[in-house]
Length: 87
Image (cartoon, rainbow, N blue to C red; front, side, top):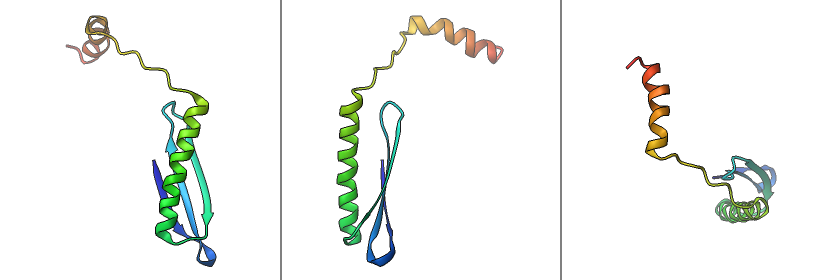
């Protein structure tokens, strides 16, 4: 998650917000605010948290990934890794 603040015309600042949700969806927002640079950064970080929480609430929690046990992974390891490297 990143928040970048750039100078904009007329003494304003552009706040560029980027973050990726747990399901892989990328979110990007560009907003122009009329406040000091440090206040714009604090505002951007608060806005980023708000957008992230709203996106999670709307999309629900991501599906947990299934991690195989060693017994289930061993044949795949031998078949894919060892044979590919001619061991």
